[in-house]
Length: 198
Image (cartoon, rainbow, N blue to C red):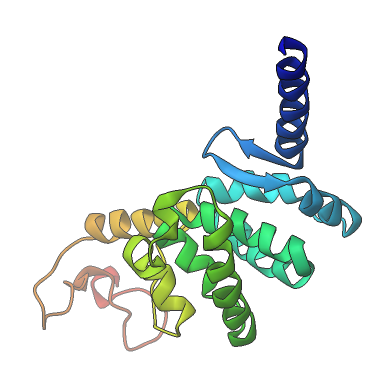
C-alpha cells in the first residue's frame, strides 16, 4: 500500500515539475512566461526577456514591441503570450495604454480577442475580472479612445529645464518693450559712433 502511495506521489510530482518547466514566473513582477513563446522569440531573433524587463520598468516602447510580437505567434503560443501581456498590464495601466497607442486598429482587435482567452488561462483571479475595472486606460485605448501617455524620463527632464529657463528669464510688464540702451545709438552719419562721441 505504501509503495502505491509513493509511486503516485512520484508520478504526480513528475507532472508538477513538467508543468512548471513549461511556464516560469518572472520574479520581479510575477509575470508568467511560457517556454514555447521564448523558443519562438529566439527563432525570430526577438529579445523577449530583455523587452519584458524593460516593459516591467514602464518602458512604453518595450510594451509596444511585446504587443507587436503578438503578430509572430499563433495558436497555443498566441494565447500564452497574451497571458504574459495580460499579467504585464496589471499595475501599470498608464504606461501600458501608452504602448497600445502605437498599435494598429487590426492589432488592437486581435489583442482584445486574445486577452479574453488569456483571462481564462491566467492563474491570477483578479485578472479574470473585466479589464475595464482594473486597467481602464488600456481598455479605453484598445477601444479607440484618445489618451495622453505619461512623459518619459527624458521628456520630463527637458520640460523641467524649459520651465526653469522660463522662470529665470527677466520679467517686464506685458505690453511694454524692454528698456533701450540710448547711449549706443548709431548716428545719422552711419559711422557707428553716436553724435556724443564727436
